[in-house]
Image (tube, rainbow, N blue to C red):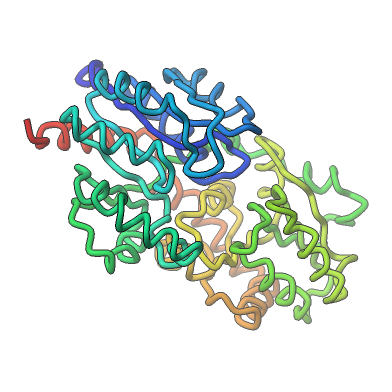
Length: 395
């Protein structure tokens, strides 16, 4: 964009590991889209001792200047170079965009931005939701009182990715202005979608012939994702006993072993496939071949994979704890249920038994994504957000 060639935004994050999803995945798509619309983009991030450079290299290939600090400590992801690096980078930037909340680099980004008179924006990525605050509750309550509340209240804005996320944070009574803006999602691996049958062919021995329905869970294998609801709900299915449940994603802290034990306990081991972590077009192929995508999370700030599934025309069943659930239900592109096994099982039974219901949802899904999640449109709105915040910042 010719009107914004000199606007320089610095994104700040702790850790750049796409295996964990969350802020890093969101940043990757946002950075690439912002570069494409003419912003100068820099990134400052800490990294841990098990650092893999994939995400940082993707950011560089997208056109961002990447500055890595580490290896950081386990507690607060601290490193002695955080302050001097941020002082230099923030002095050069027009605005600072801080991702996530709980580590040293986010706090120092806020403090140094205030000292240098630079506006800064926080994107909490769902970390202000009640579920998130309930994890390590006492430590977070103390950190919020000592540091974070001041950093948030003095921000030029707090960015929420959905009205639900904004409303869930309302009891904290934060005073910074709110921006509600959808996440930018990289759908390049999904356009055009892979032809049907690739994923089935790869796992032919487990999936059987092409008439066997596939339920797909694709996310981190983690307690908050609701697999303890999905396994018993799947085991309760009556009319569609030939369906296969595919669980795809990285194992977090050894939780997959517990999920495998649930599968054996409910006697569905012969109908559950653990496909491991899927990347790129393999990820798209799994979604294309699925009859339904299922995400019964206890808390989900956004659910990027929900939009990926809809982009290829696969309807979804999600819990009402996935923050974008209102938009999914209103658009008729999937079903929304409470995080309960019996309610989830009924929704699965209904969807699998009604081809027309799935067909209608699948038909509406790609247009829903095109209308609401166009990356260039959202990136251009960020240019407008930044320009407004810079213009209104105290001199």
